[in-house]
Image (cartoon, rainbow, N blue to C red):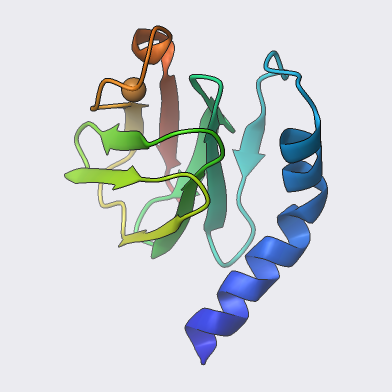
Length: 130
Ligand SMILES: [Cu+2]
């Protein structure tokens, strides 16, 4: 029940962003930095060979939950140093739970070939001390 409530909250609060992404043909959205709230829950959307947001800030030692989805085709997220790798198809949502134990910058990339823009799919998670 708690998971469903959390997912609905994420979807609800992300609706404006989803609407822009789903309706617009725009692929060159500005880079967004997402500083999480208390719950450390962040939605990551893959589209047009990019991740939105590209930078996520998390607190060390606090459980984090990422909701990862793709809009246009199968994509993947592999987070170096955090032992996370997840593929997702368009319209599906993967839930990734982990607790960052080390402060630092962890880059994420797409680990499956998804098309001509595959190599530019990059982002980073910055883990900061509490
Ligand atoms: Cu790819």
